Amino acid sequence: MKKINFIIVCIILVASIFTGTGLASAAILEVGPGKNYATINSAIAAAGNGDTILVYPGTYNENITINVPNLTLKSVGGRDFTTIGPGAGANQNTVVSIQPNLGTITVEGFTVLLSPDKISGYHPIGIGQRMAAGTGTACNIINNKIKVTGTLRNGIQVSGSNSKIIGNIVEGGPLTADWGSSGILIATTDSVRSILISENHLIGEMNYGIGIITWSSGELTDVQIKNNIIEKTVSAGISIGGKVSNTLVTNNVIRNNKLVGLEEIHNNYYGYAVGNPIGTKVYYNQFCNNEIDMKIYDDPNDIYVIGEPKLDASNNYKCSESNTLPMDQISRILGFSKSKYATGEIIEDYCKDNPNSEGCKK
Image (cartoon, rainbow, N blue to C red; front, side):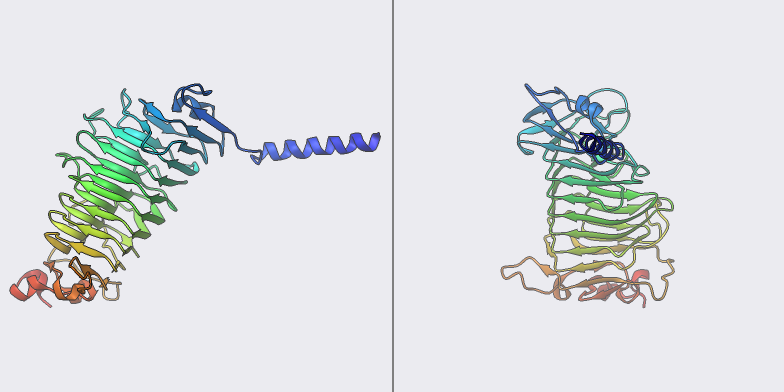
């Protein structure tokens, strides 16, 4: 009997140790009619580290703040049947706000409805981390739909390393007067790396389909942009600016954008970041009916550092019946010297017609 009691005591002690170190089984909390929680925020308030919140079909008119470590927020019925927002109240311009130092946060399977009006002076954001609030939090934003009924700031905004944005739809809002809008924005003032943007569909009157930028002294490296469809933006399908390195842009369809398919911003051209993008690789993309397929914005006095990796555009295609026309035959890159900034299969139509332009001088 003493031996049995000793074994039982040991089991209890081991269980308490695992519970104390956060290794106990994570809980599942359910939100919806007839469930334990009527609102998503009430479930978050009751959740602990590593828990999963399952949200049943319905419309939840609330703005969400995720402040629980390693939380998974997931719909049961998928994004077509489960809607969040817009909520009301001061400082609620982001429908789903994700805080720093939370490990890995997953938001999956929702339609996020943005307010038609400014809230607290800002245009709305769908799912997002603030630019300086990404430290210690990787975001998995998966299979959501951002619907805009008015103006848009950013549909999805992420600033944490090792984040993944996969399978989302962002229906863009119109150009805003006080801030450029993006379907997906990666923006940071910190040092951030390893972000995947894949299989998203970005469509509408937003400024940029995908924006990759640093602000102030921020640095951003190893971003992959692949297998996305980006169309009908006001300014550019993809914009890369600031101290950004080793960006891979591959297997995307970039079409019907009013100004530029893909742009790089050099030499603090718009005044928001120090540093030039380096090592950008643009492979196997389709460019269709853009006013300009690729463009580099550059001050004529920019001093290019010899040896910096250049933009490499190879094996890209123009939309055609056969989809086999190489980009070096038909694409347009305006206003900069290829030898200075770019390598690959590129033709400089603008420079052929304007050889004395500052951007075209070899």
